[in-house]
Length: 98
Image 1 (tube, rainbow, N blue to C red):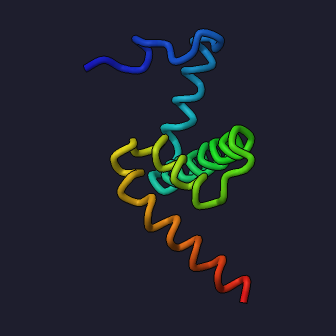
Image 2 (tube, rainbow, N blue to C red; image 1 turned 60 degrees about the vertical axis):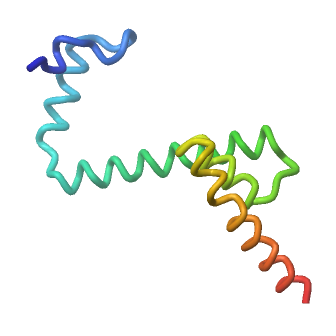
């Protein structure tokens, strides 16, 4: 089984820095690692949504969510949820207008 030392993760990070990173990471509990992963995932999703809004400024929130689903899960999954998201948005719009 290979270990992380066999394959540098980053070209711009020294081997010593990577070793320190993994040493510190190995001291964290499973719960701490899970929390870190969840925070990173939320940050990536947030940045992705910001990018989608920038590239598609006229899209509704539902349309942006469909685009996000397509990026994350592929076109087939996005197609399956597209109608539901757009229908939910349409229902919300009609309640707000009343």
